[in-house]
Amino acid sequence: MRRYHILWVGRSRSLEAKTLPALRQHYEVSVAHGRREAVDICVAQETHLTLIDVPTIRFDLEHFCADLKTQNPSLLLFFFLGRGMRLDQLPRANGHLRQAFTLRQLLGRLARLLPERGGEVIAWQGLQLHLDAHSLSWGTEEILMTPRQGVLAKAFLEAPEQVLSRALLMQEVWGTSYLGDTRTLDVHIHWLRSALLTLKAPFQVRTHRGVGYALVSLLPSS
Image (cartoon, rainbow, N blue to C red; front, side, top):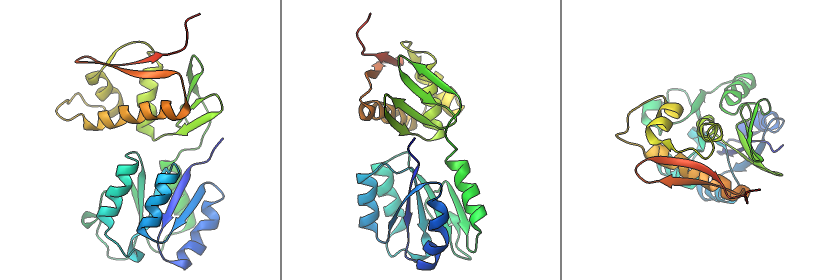
């Protein structure tokens, strides 16, 4: 199975030397020292988490994070912070560590964000959702996902061909019945549709206007 891909962004050679060997034992890791290089890597390769060494970057962090999220809305962001840096003055991140941290601390935090792969599988007509691994596969192709994307895919795979309302999906995935702003749901539905296309899987998330969505098979009926 493929490993999670992490993008390491920063200019501290000493921090690279400290962290990269350990990271590469568990993940596929790319390194970027500049903004354009980092964005190009995210465009060229599916990236699951970006580690940003905030004190060493030479560009606008907020715009950079917005660019990465535009390329991949489900991308996880993790900051390395210097002493005295305030989180409330930085873009929202999924995790952070202040220097000096240990490798055990770093690997522990990442393991919670990128769970080990394997375990229970939900399957329908050959489309497989690996729950513990947070991956979706069709044939030999596989895509990794965030935990919330996994919950969304699980809702559809447990009720194939059935129309699931937006209210039900909001409750299942985000634990809320609030429908005032469902843009996050729209982003996740778009992700699932894109994932199925990337896998070349013969399935479709079909919109039932004013009602909800259904996962349908495009395989010929037997």
